Every structure is written in C-alpha cells, then in structure tokens.
Image (cartoon, rainbow, N blue to C red):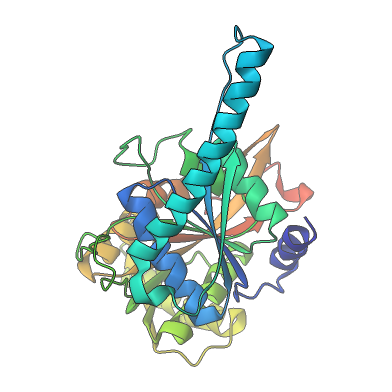
Length: 321
C-alpha cells in the first residue's frame, strides 16, 4: 500500500515520473491477454522492471457438499491450482519465446474475482503499472461499463495500459517473434494539471522506445485566430509541463476532443495513445470525464491511462478530461 500511496501523492503534487519498476500483467489465456503480455514484457525490458503474471480463478464449493466432500474437493482444487501455475509458466514461455530471457518474472494464481485480484495484486506487489487486454474470454468487442478492464482503470491508483490490436497493424500472438512496436505516440492534452502526468509518461516512453511524439489539443472552434492562439498557448504549456528533448510536434485541431483524438490516431497510424484520466470520486464510485471514456471505448490503438486525483475542493465541480 505504501508504494501506491506514494505514487498517488506524487501524481497529486506534480512530482510524478514514469519509470515503472514492477509491472503487473493479468493473463486469462485469451488472445488479447497474450498480446498484453508482449507489451508488458517489452516495457519490463526497456525499464528494467520486474514482471508479475497474474491469473485469477473463482473456485466455489457447492453449499450442499458434506464435510468429507468439501475436504476432498479442496485437495483437488489445490492440485488444480498448481497445474494452472505450471500451464501459466509454459504459456508465457510459448508467447514470449526467446524474449523471455533476462526478464525478472514471477507467477501468481489466486482465487478471486479478476477485478479484486488485479487491484489487490497491484497493491500487495507494489506494482506501479498494470498492463491488460481490453477484453478477455468473454469475447466483448468493446469496453462496456462493468467490464473488468473498465473497473480496474476506474479504481487503480497506478497507470493502466489497456491493450488491443492496432487497426493498422496486426500482431500475431502465436508467433513469439511478433513483437509490438511503439514508433508513434499520441498524447492528447487539455492544458490542465491532469494532463501533465500523461505528458510525463508520453515523453518517457518516447525516449525509451525512440518514438515520434505528437501532442494534440482539440478546440471546439473554427476560427483561425483562436486556433493560432491555442497553438502558442500549447507550446508554452508543454515547455512548462515537462522538459523534453524527444522528437515531437504539437497539433491543434478544431472539433470535439474525443472525435479528434480517435480520428487523428487512425489517420496518422499512431501506435499508442497516452491519456490523463481524472479520478472524480462520487459517493463510493469513481468516474472519468467523457473524453477519457470515449477514447478508452473506441480507440484504434492501445491506450495508457495516467490517473490524476482531484483534491477535495475539486470534487464539487470536476473538469472533463
């Protein structure tokens, strides 16, 4: 809990730096979780991070079982758990192939609901990055409210890398030699405090993977003067937000933010969107701005969400991100 709290404090006070040292990758043997494993391994290698592969299963004992039957089934489940761990190790080696060499890998099989297992696993293991597929064995083709990944993104205190196949480039998870590329990174910003964490992460990734970075600001106006002024403000904001020597450019586009982010990512064949997600607590739930939710649902490429936590005084009137 100490690591998560420290990271949350850094994000809140502007001292956040994206240098993951322990990556958590939930795996359910689906194609997209295999793809997320490839991304997690690439990140672990670049940052010299530990990588924990987590598999969650819910084993429920029938209530009507006798004590003898329950004890017998518990023993069988214990053997099944060990078998799953062996299968998990073999599966990871098959997916990663030779790229597994040199990685600090750890395997965990837990009995819990996937959301609970992932959030508690990140906290217990002091993970500072979660990498996971956007849907699992249920076969959902897009994020829906209540899905595992959306609940994790909403409640995680650390960045969450949500993985999907890029529309412009298919990565064959059955080929160990097929690896993800991050040649083009898109970082949409709204020039708020919440966007600084996303910029920091985007710059770090661009430097590590030698990527071209585009910083995008969408403005709901068609006036050339407004767009020109916004471009100057964006340049000044970037200079104040982060110190970067990366290969990057700024783009200001008129229109709805989510629509422009998604359209630009498709047009330019971006490999990753790095987005700030403002955690706005309401009663016992957490919600994001509309832009973040739309991009998460409809992005043509993987999305890395960097959480931003509002102070109590902001809770009455949160800004959209």
